[in-house]
Image 1 (tube, rainbow, N blue to C red):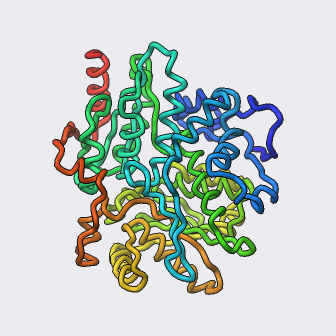
Image 2: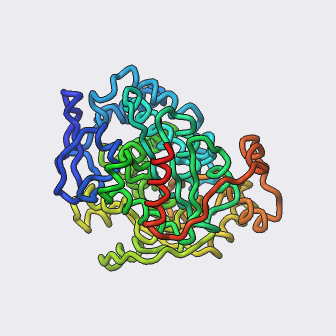
Image 3: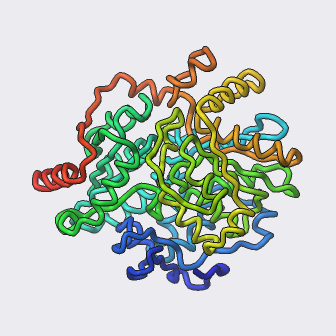
Length: 448
């Protein structure tokens, strides 16, 4: 991998497979394919670098200008500038405020989008890119996605009624919150929900098998909307630049604590940092699924079966995007460890943090934000002079069944959630069996 400054030619960005045995492609093909033919994740051949003036003068730019400047080099000429600017505007048409919780910790609220979760940005960006790529294509595309909670709702909302696109979402039965499930199973039309008897890792494995099945891919035009897709992953950089614009102490960059499950979000933050974004340190805040915290202690990476927790969107035992993080650091463990720490936080600690922060600071965290908050506090015990922020990735109402017993109060319900709570559920219950998924997809294809 080479790292370079802004390139003169807009059409020069290419993507290679991290398994290193597939053809190099442009952003359009990487988005449509999702996963490379050799099973590898796509990765940009070069990384944009921004000079210090951009960061010192960032308050002179609008959010739309910042986002366009960040994403355009990774798109190249496969989307014209005027179209890309429209996509960017539609992607970030809600606020992303940095809220001060106390003197040492702030919260970057990523839940002000239509499905109350950080994944709205990536899903909206990808859906609009894919809509642009497919508008002159007569063949219908099927977006196949696994979700541990918030991805499914964001993807469903982003792709709802997009012409020429069918969406099939796999989610683990009984392991997503009530609100998360309602966001998956109540839209209908081109959105189809499969409730899998198993874990998120089972769902993700079934999706990966689908992309590697030659017969299925001859019959169907498949792509993925998980964070393995570059069009989902890359725009997540936006949050970190927006936070820097709002960060008051520009002489002292923040420590950033990111709730981490599949590691796409923190990977985007690390990419932004390598591009020049000032950051003191990153923390990958994990729940009981501690493959990465243990790796950073031992240098041994051992995927495990996912453990169910109250921060369910992070219940991932084999995070797909961690290979991208290793690539960012050229697989140099010492360099990675200098930039990234990782903590495993228990459910009890998570609940205690929700309770304490609510009572002391009058700020209500969701379970994922609480994991990040606890991890940042643990880091600050070692480095008490360091200030930072967490990524608050979902509105607490999405986990009211966890939060309300802790604070012993009702969580106010936004109007967007009220509308779906009483809608009828439409999903298909299925065993964690790829052959069953393949049968479903082929039957669906034959019906169409």
